[in-house]
Length: 112
Image (tube, rainbow, N blue to C red; front, side, top):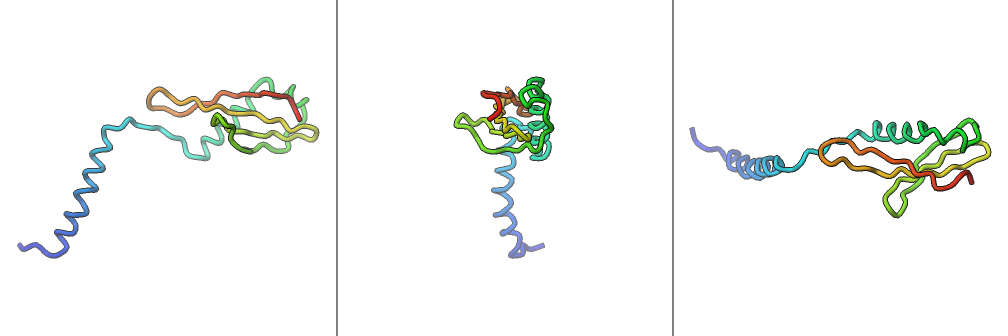
């Protein structure tokens, strides 16, 4: 059987791809949640904080949303009620090895 013109082309393309695939095997594994589940975890962390009901004066929440990023990388979230806009920050805590990022809630002030 003779080589066709396609065989050298496949070989030239396949070798670098295999090299890159095997070179990546020595890297540590990174577990990541999808954007949906990461957002769900963040919102759950915020709403599950026991300080929140009193800070919001037991008012119903009209909206909660990611409104920016602080200089230190913490994500800014604003919780809106009828009489209050409460700004909180989620500080990411990276795992030591494989695993998911968790968050620490920072509430620097009361309602605006």
